[in-house]
Image 1 (tube, one colour):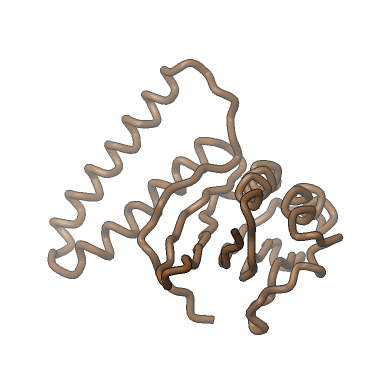
Image 2: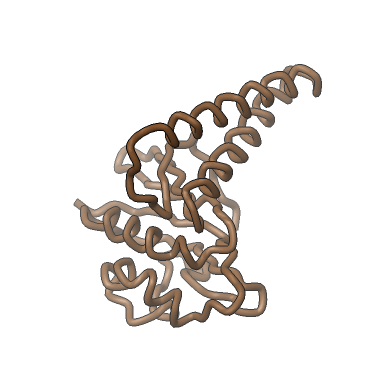
Length: 184
């Protein structure tokens, strides 16, 4: 079963990271897409750049729509896991899946240099999302109360993770997110 998806992210890279290093890191995804390099990854949407590295801005840009099959997700996860140590900071990668019934489902994948950096990016995204939602109805003081609670919850979660048995640190995480459309 084939499905159309859209990948979107602006991933800041460490100084000195080359296009070749990025291509090596995301090799599982390039292999899945039958591409020799970033330049070979073309989007179904002509106005989208696909996957490219801006070495002046040190930014790996993902804006790609394509058809995928069942083994896409493991290839993407492996690529993001490999890419993590090359990242300057943790950021979200939006994955939008266009379902046969006309609906779409969005997931957030987080990629970054460390598990703690990813945890902080997840907290930051949660605070941004909740703040935007609450701002429709409440003032800054009420929103500050909720964001303070979110900060405490994230801190507690991080502490409980630290007290658990050590798992191998991953360079990416995944979460679901309400659907948002990108205007390109």
